[in-house]
Length: 186
Image (tube, rainbow, N blue to C red):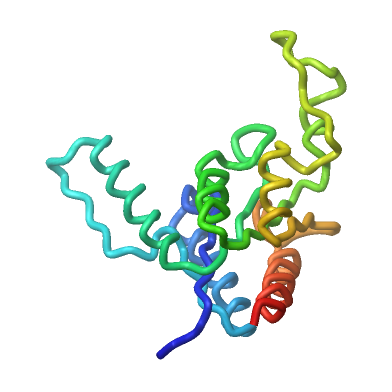
């Protein structure tokens, strides 16, 4: 029986070109293997989408396939680098919450080491007059606090990265923290 812990790899990389996505995921999986883990990418499914189905049907099938993958995993490492705005990709945030809701640990990384309030601008309110949270956390408090409460951590890149959405060094920090947390549970 294989006892290798499976780690779900969440992040906006699924929206990158096939080549870009493949290169980043290959590096993540290589680092995880070196530490005795198996990386599981959201695209690691046998899902085929039929042309006669609607786009909404495709969306539901992808959602279910990714949920099944998450159910088969023991933890998550999420790329929380802001994507299409000042916060992490919303699909990635859902996946983090889904894993945490199962009582599994979550770890994350970001290539933007500013806190959420700094990314939102200098005003305490947005253009519509609504308050911008200021808890000196990397992202919305539900993300950062949820990850911490799950036993995980979030790491921010401190120096240059090889890609605008990926750093082997910061990903390595996540894996080492995951390994240390896993050893405590054994």
